[in-house]
Image (cartoon, rainbow, N blue to C red; front, side, top):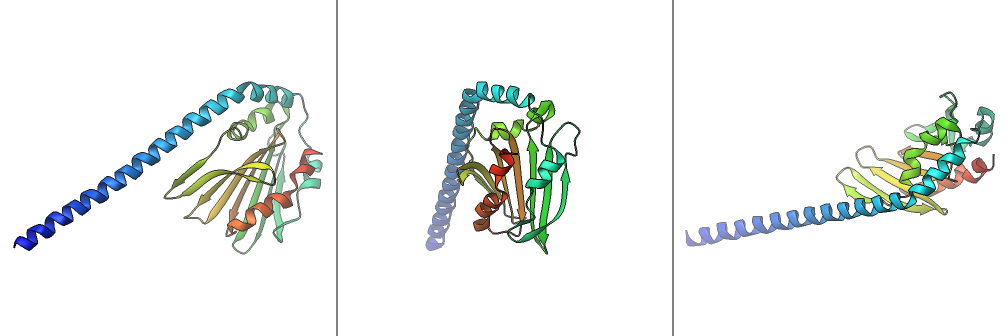
Length: 203
């Protein structure tokens, strides 16, 4: 009986220790997340004047035409063929979308041109996101900031869907969003390189 009491006490200590450790990890994560939010808020505030100037410049530009987008959109990505595309579906806003897939492998690309009154506002979330840094991990996956071929990219991963999402603001004008299914992480950099965004900027 005495040994049994000792065993129960040891089990309780173990449970309390585990609980404290888990709470400690949770608290540390919350502090890190809060610190990142504060840091990003300061960064966005610091860049506010530049973002307003960028919007003003873009409003005076003409968005790319359907023909210009078609000349840029690649026929293949990672050897997957372009199976559907759409252009400038919103009046007075330049945009381009393309889907590449074979079987379960799929890549979706969306580009919004920030030129013009509607475009300048449409790329706003991407413009702001480009001034922030991300480094969060949750049960569902993660979001982090990294560089691909000199371009700042927000990379997110959804474990449940085995899907990656890349979002970026390119050339102070174009919002670019890339979503993949059944594509490995090592191929993400290659997708960005094959898009050849510099050609889009030079149209």
